[in-house]
Amino acid sequence: MKKPVKSEEELGWKDIEVGCTVSDAGNAAQYRTGDWRSTRPVWDHTRCVKCGVCYIFCPDSAIRKNEEGYFEADLFYCKGCGICAQECITACIKMVEEVEE
Image (cartoon, rainbow, N blue to C red; front, side):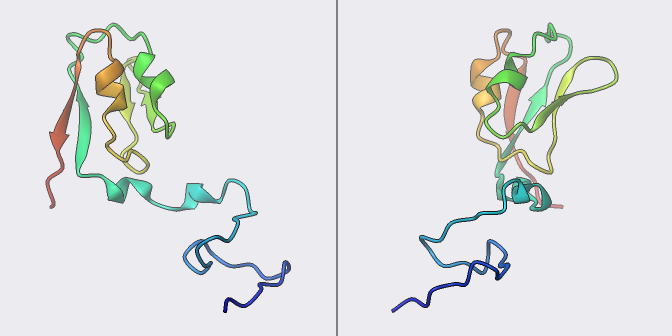
């Protein structure tokens, strides 16, 4: 039998049991979800038209603009789902296998 958790206790997401609710909205920013990735997106800027479709479709908001206006993945949060590559209108994004260093 599971023990009830008092609402005033503050537990991290790793401490809660299955079925519990995370009530601290926005706490995922502190977790390096990019470590789950096995592939990562790589942009060919010679083909990129800076349309931002990759940015719009990224489910994790892990794509940002660099200084030149091109988009790139924030590998701290990118999970390597490949949606950006699938939705890219110029096919300038390729998913490459993540290599351990």
